Amino acid sequence: MPASNKKVTKPSAKVAAVRKAMDKNIAKNVAKRAAKVRAANAAADGREANAAKAPKVTAEMKAALTPKGFGSLIVGGNANPAKPTKPAKAGKATAALTPIERQAIEGILASDYMDGMTGNDAVGHRVWTWSANPFASKPTFSGAASSLVKKGFAAIDGAGKDACIQITRAGMDAFEATAAAKPVAKVAKAGKASAATTKPAKAAKPAKASAKPATDGVKAPTGAKATIIAMIERKDGASAAEVCKKLGWVKAGATIGRAIKLAPFKVRKERDADGALRYYREG
Image 1 (cartoon, rainbow, N blue to C red):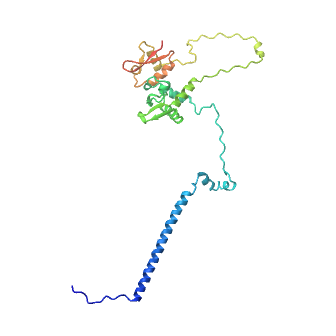
Image 2 (image 1 turned 120 degrees about the vertical axis):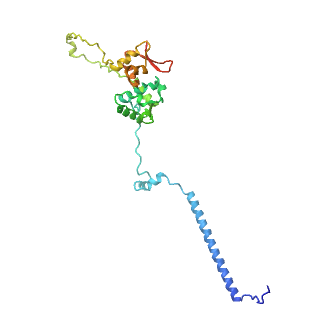
Image 3 (image 1 turned 180 degrees about the horizontal axis):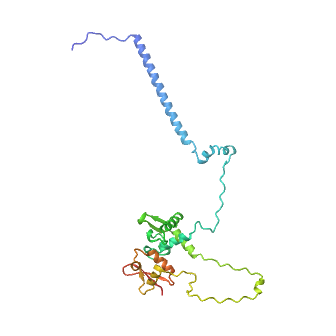
């Protein structure tokens, strides 16, 4: 292309001055903005540093800022001092077994699935809840089992027919403690002989002969329990399967346990060749 014939003229002094002034203003604005940015960054850094140095607000400080605790800021002490707790009396157990709870534990120990274990061996051994009911009604055992769980004497897992129950260490300790406790006989205080002792005692009337034998206050077993005791008294003893077959039942573990308690002799438990638990008369 041919070169242009127009001449390039330099800007006039006025235009150059205007441009110079504009460049100066732009530089000032840029410097101001940079200064603001630096100031903002410094302020942010200062807040972070102060936050790091600031003491942590404790629970006591928060309590002192409440209307009730505001007096502690004025007086310099705690406006609501905690009341001193009384020391627990020594010698008292935190919880004890009730008669129904103790009977429930006896039912657990008498379960066929306990395999005759007692004491430390029975702790933590799971058995079906339906096999451990020693009561005539299911709700009674359910209530006793719930009470044992609340006290920490037993643990239940599963639900319905799949529910299992086990005795805890605390439960076994409480059970053995109540078993070891014996009533203390009251001793009569020595005193002056009463005037009644000087009178001659009246002759006792002869007791009438009774046709019923004396039972020493213990109710003689009857029905299924009497049948179970008779089967255990045999030379070969009896197993739960034999008892169920004899009585026409599906299970008999709890009833066997109650019958053993009523038996007038000691009962020994052993496993036969098939692994089934058998009951024998001791001696």
